[in-house]
Length: 84
Image 1 (cartoon, one colour):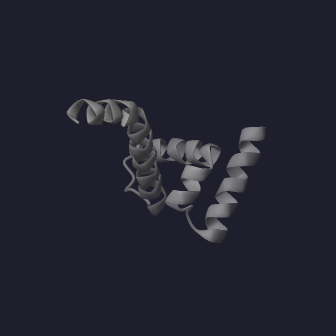
Image 2: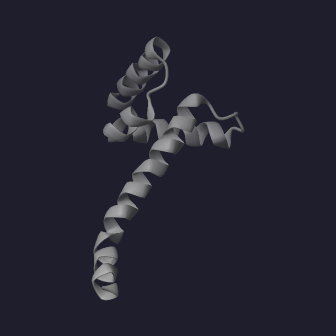
Image 3: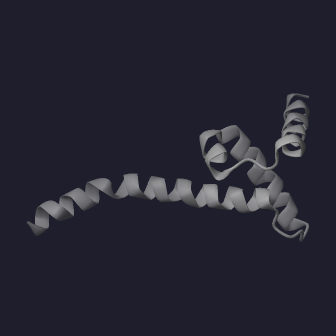
């Protein structure tokens, strides 16, 4: 029931305001998860990529880049120290 209400609210938001931006998807993990699930369904059905799914893809790429930057910080710092 909770999921149905959430999806209905999400659908209403899309209809009223357009798709969420990349920044909005990054800031709201629950919304991102819902959008990602919807996009997986659309892709499986062979539908063309919507603006929503393009934004979700960009958000996923941005988040992954941020994670990789943070994960590599200690390695880069050690490498800088080694090269001095």
